[in-house]
Image 1 (cartoon, rainbow, N blue to C red):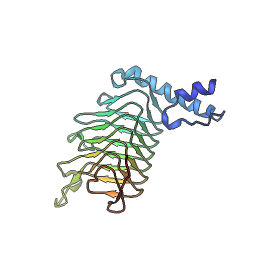
Image 2: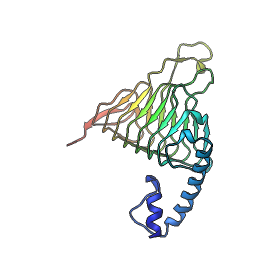
Image 3: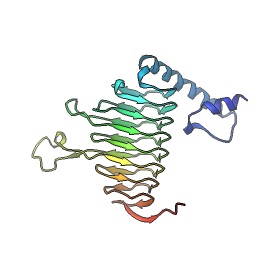
Image 4: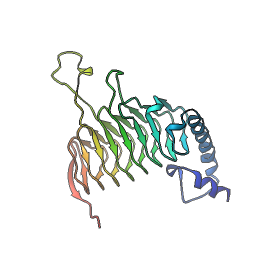
Length: 228
């Protein structure tokens, strides 16, 4: 009975149908992340719609720009720089893996637009999401480790200070019900349709239509999914 209670309270990324006493370790991890989440809610109640799980070493900059739904889980040593024009929204049951880096701006004088991650999204460890332009990820999407989203471009003709001379960002949109493999890079201006699969290691520099399977560098559509 105790195991079932623990299992029910675990965020989706920590659940297993094979209940055993190995959940004891998960319980203590859960308890620590829940206590950190409660402490965050105590000082930033307007940012949270429900329970949040904040693991060891997490840094959240500009929390007034962050809104979270219920049962959001933020992995160990992740850093969220939420400074942006329209803020960061993490929907219900969003999971960010360990060592994720989310950055709305590199320079205080030039904040990014917004990041919106809808409900039931899993993003694996070591993800890097830069959202100078708007970035949106649809619901029920799963993303492997080492994701890189770069919603920003630079003026390659600049003679000096090229790092600071950006061009207008077009943003990135990822649809619902997608599966994105490990090590995928998605560049500014790309729209990924619903029900898309992107193979591991792909570099996506052009939009991908709904229901497609894309692989390679640069990513290309190799077939369509047989969706009923």
